[in-house]
Length: 82
Image (tube, rainbow, N blue to C red; front, side):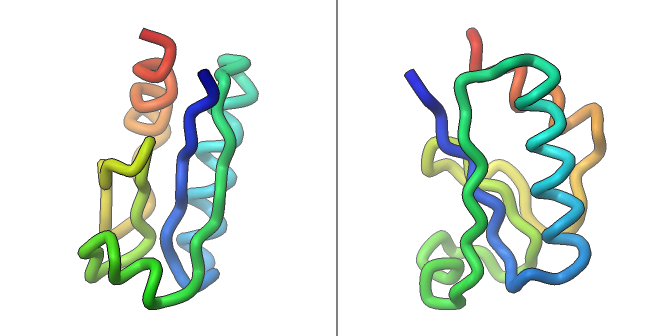
């Protein structure tokens, strides 16, 4: 099963850093996941997110309002394999 990790945000520096951080973890763990960037406001608002960047894993919002830590990103990706 391939998991979907979405980074919600308008393309700001923090959104770019968040997407890169998550991609690094997916690559490091060779996880079955794809990273998608969602930048249009109606789609972001549909998740109920008021601050970005936000992270959605398999349609569940797991983080909003800042760049997650490397440790947190690794834990999310490691959790996909379980």
